[in-house]
Image (cartoon, rainbow, N blue to C red; front, side, top):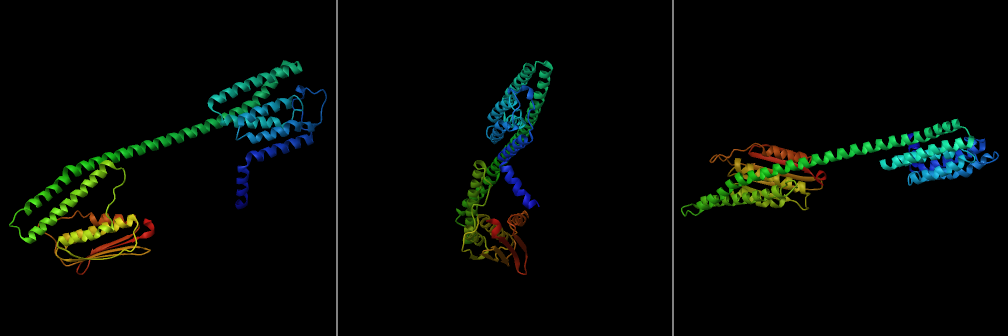
Length: 396
């Protein structure tokens, strides 16, 4: 049943003024057929009773005015008032009264507060005029008072109902506006808090970390000037110097982003930087074999995540498997990306001690989970293995 009634309801709702106009027209025809006229026969200017069918002269045009209810309710209400007066002074049918009250309600609902006050003033004049007209037409003040009460009751109910509806709509709009304002203010506060945090992070990176990294590069360069250095020591110092300079450049870029950009921080280098990561690991004493099968460009989230996994895994190889071997496998197909880094042999670096924070793998797991992938990391018989499976469809 609902499947058959809902389309009809939608059809009627989309054409409501036309449907109501047809209903009023049918009501006018029915009233004329049964002779339902003469509501205020004492005000009629006609000398003798006339056929009820004459009520259609005002009833049908009044029904047509309902078509103005959504487009121009104030104009429709004024025209309906004119037809109502003409009808009262002649046949006194019921349809012009109903249409006038309907359009009055619609006009009040859509009017501003100032227009509603003007409508109320006009209605008071109409009530006074109806009382005066009835008194003059019948010669009885009591009849004029009763007419004023009837007119005020009919018009007052429509006006009160329309005003109540309009005020309810205005109150809803006000609450909605306040909620939107509060949301905008909260968003602004969040942006300001993020900006303050970014500025604080930029200051700390500049004042503390960048200074230390720069000092490492300067000291490595100074040590390289000693002619007594062996080739092995010189190579290690050059690796330290180059890594420090790269880290310093990365910090400067990060500080610039933190100070000047509202965009979220992302890794700028993707899988295209993996060969450079491999060379850096080899300069640190790890023999790395790279096997990459990436024929198509990866979506940015997958590209960044794959590069970050390889970077962290190679950093752990340098820290915990110095002098050993590592193999980096990268394959991609329509389903996603398979990243594997397997290390063999080597010894942990103990001098100087390089303790890890323990956060690297956990952060990688969070990154992979955000892409709905899986990450497995753990010891093997000869070393350590890290494998991540990243689905392609989630990152698209």
